[in-house]
Length: 259
Image 1 (cartoon, rainbow, N blue to C red):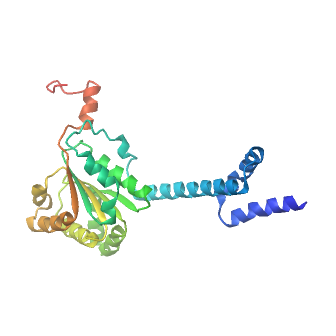
Image 2: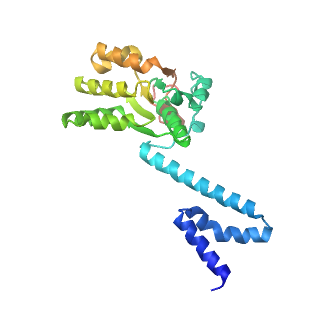
Image 3: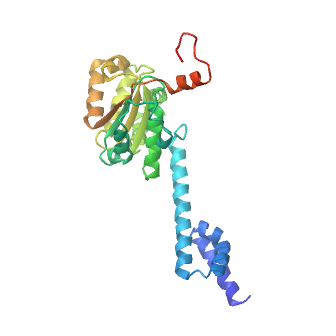
């Protein structure tokens, strides 16, 4: 085996040992192209390191997406703002800067079912993950179930610590299912742990004035809102349901509805 072959083998092995797997995979094909084009050594290194960096960032993004439990991938670029003119797009643009995350502020999307609250929440979640933040999505009904189960098994503290670690917590559909006394207590503990430390995005079909109804306790609702709204951006959406729009487009609207 000549010296070039030894160098070649050692280079590949060193790349694998250093876990530069992306570079190792594309090395041969790129060196062949670079040799034909007369590419400089610096340009070769720059390209290979860039490809490795992009590969690692993609892998990290996909890992964070997996752990976030986001139910679908809905980017903010897919949101139809023309259909919901009540939304101030400048507010959404400001949210996409993620300053609210750096400032540990909350975001609440309020509005009737189907107006895009969850889509906007997920879009911000994806933006946060792309920027390197950890995020976790959970529906309010699932959260209630898991918190109460942890409470009954004397395991609430570890569960709340786990949720408190995420820089962004997304809680969907507050108001669709009532919170009993235990659930209200657990939720208050969660909100208190995250207060002024990290950000929470909530979606709800109920106005703030109706939250006493959700929690069956005006005192706990007031205490919760005091912490949630202290540092918070509220987006009220008043418009038609996207799902109803699609049903109408397909000719499935009930006869009494005007298309």
